[in-house]
Length: 182
Image 1 (cartoon, rainbow, N blue to C red):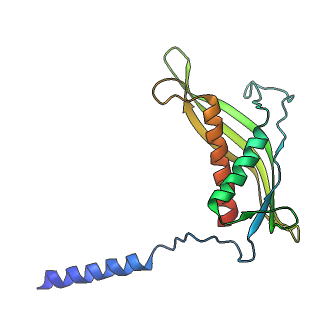
Image 2: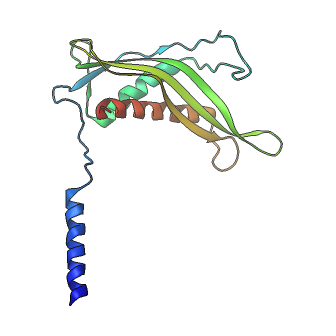
Image 3: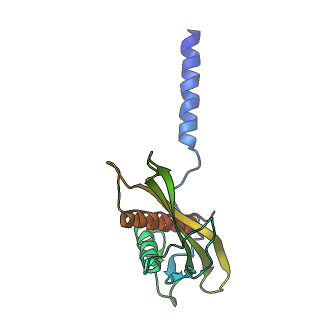
């Protein structure tokens, strides 16, 4: 009889913990009066004329990448649904950003010193301000989105596909950072 009683107590305790949950919520942590955001066009601040060094032999530059980032961030906010996209006059928040670096670095080589895998990293500076007061909600310098891609084999991708994936990662991180307010 004793083992049956302890099993019931154990099951009851497990049920209590499960029903209590872990504190996770799918709701936004934004104040209830924040319902919309304006995403300004990202600026491209990559200094392609900067002096090179042994650490950085070249500066990556892809024309129009700032437009792709702006579009991806807007689309991610639309998909998320927590904040609506609005004009500057009607927005509760205003997001501004600047692309400061595009980095493609080798991760893995084959036996002949050919590059098999790259990491692409997009680095931006971001500010989100309250539209009415201009007060800073959050800002971060060096905010990054990244991806890796293989150049050979069954998992090979083009650089363009990898850049699109890095932009999506960046957009997801920006939206999460904004709506989760951490």
